[in-house]
Amino acid sequence: MKTTVIGLGAMGAGMAGNLFRAGYLSQAWNRTAERGQAAAQAHGFALADSLEQAAAQADLVITSVAADSDLIEVCERLARVMNAGSVVLDTSTVSIDTARQVGERLEAHGLHFLDSPVSGGKEGAEKATMVMMVGGDAAVLEQIMPVLATISRKVVHMGAVGSGQATKAVNQIMCAGINQAVTEALAFGQHQDLDMDKVVDVVSSGAAGNWFVEHRGRSMTSGTFAPGFRVALHHKDLKICQSMLAADDVQLPIVEMTLVHYERLMAAGHGDEDISALYRIKRPLFGDDV
Image: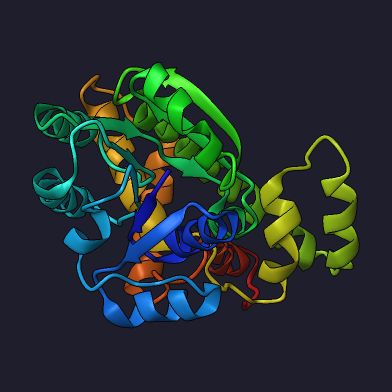
């Protein structure tokens, strides 16, 4: 199955690399040429000169973009060049309305659309350990499962188009709560002059263990916030969640508090850091510096 990846950021580059090594990737393209070239050089795959060239003969196009408007623009271009019966699978995090709008537009051109946001961060994309939550036709998903098996460890069909994004919203709200809990608890622990390597080791092994404390605990307590999942992107995702909640006249404290904290971090120039940079806000609560 000839596969193309559109969007070679932190997630798309890793996916493209794994697809290339598995023999599925035909071409890839990124709007910013410099980033695309860096990804191609790192993984050894070929870059197309244009989106249209990359997608024209593809059986499957996997998109990974930052915003709703980007996905709409990309899919408008895909609709004009892809062959009927081909599949577009989007791994971005966008609103349910955007997923449905794009799906209807592509289906009108005889193309199949699956909304498939992912969880696992940059590491998951690079190590092919992502989890994919998919909305769309189950039969279409089954056709492309051999390809998806090379970029993920788990693929779950959630229902109709849009249900993938709804599931991702659940995930992003939960990630916000975990971030708040872990950064506060570790800031407290560091203030107690504990050996934080030992703290991370022991709590990761018990009832409080989770992916975030295990993979980010040591880096945040040492003041390092290299991006795996950027503050600005999680902020964008939580704004989507906030809009979904507003439709039901609901506010969730974790969402509202985390948005305020992320906005403070972005205003201070930390928007491109990992979300564990929330630690920058928690340490001063104890009178400590990061």
